[in-house]
Image 1 (tube, one colour):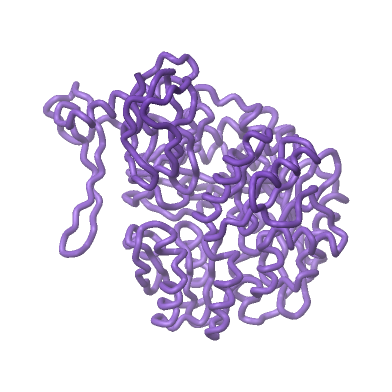
Image 2: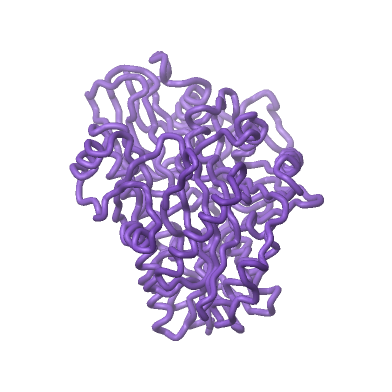
Length: 588
């Protein structure tokens, strides 16, 4: 076993790996960006090394900085977590070439399965068929249009080296192809460091079912049951459960055997996940994630297997200590991803900011995997996952009821979260009857009026208790160390431009754009970076038309005009950072 492991990640997965290492007496090394200097994973690790930079590209995707930290720390192994470099064969190879163990599959397997196109070919070679799709990288929107005409609309553009819904865009018509491909490539490069994409048929009402596999370096392999991840928005999972409900035993077994064939067919070792789309009694191979999954805890809860500990043992050369017949699925588990997003009636708006209160629930069968504590900052530059609530029950109804109780017990304030939407899903008859699909949240679930509780308007003594206040986050440097301070400023003390932004923000969050009689001042609903400006001064726009594309927490958000008219001001440009409520475009 290793003496010291470097975790090339941040947030809750870094915390998860650190804890697993500590339980086995392994020293831990954290790495951090400028914004994460005091993050929880840094506080828990035995030692930590700065990567510099704020954005993921400048820090957690900075290969040279991470390699330097490996050398300086003397780490014997690197655990990549998920996201960032976890499915990057070049990174894995650069680690192994230095004599350091990559806690994951060999680079060759990542290359085969990490590239979704070659992965489809590899699956087909072992007799596992996938959803119809192309077998080459997209070079332009014409290929998307041609595929749509042949197979029918809608189609899905997907990042070839990604997963988790990042870099995936659904295209409903030929006219949407160019913009969708451009957006998918931007998200893919931001999250995975590569922008290659491919296209495949988009099923109309599928369930997303996946199989956890684990293979050692001695030719042994097992599958650890199924998971259902069909409750999604923007192709990103909200709720996962194990085992996948309402599937015949022979389907579970067939999926498990198919997943193991796919993994062993490419010489895979360590933990991985093979994903399928299930519809009308049949299933199609979707992709393989050559890493640990965000939803791995539900598998741990129903099998009793610590997957991170197994990853470390397999990477150190130990054989699996059990066979397929030894594994038993016990009960049911549900995982809730607590994201810093306001459900906002179904719009799911990113909500970066400081966590003021965080008190996770507890009780029998309840687990909390978190990456933050009260006082920590959720940055716009990273993924918005605050933590994961995992609940076990002897059957599915018990697990769901326990999860609802635990969500109601959770105390989390300072940032908006997806909890109200999670409760709406869990309590809905469709979900409880397993009549939902991957499109159910967006197409069927009515989230009208479902939103996060409003933030407090003030804190502490107040000379003018009746006057509204606005929060302003200020960065203060003391003796070379950066501190973030939150101030609640009376509106009367705000600069004129800020007052306009405040009023615009109130109008923009109080109603939709459909009526065409809203504010002419288009304000962004959250902090972020302007990706693209779609209008110019003098241009005529219609209510609901997108005027800028804003990236926040690695998700692109279209900011619409609330009224029809002529653009008289454009106050931002691509690459510029903006704060929640800032006016970006003015329409008369």
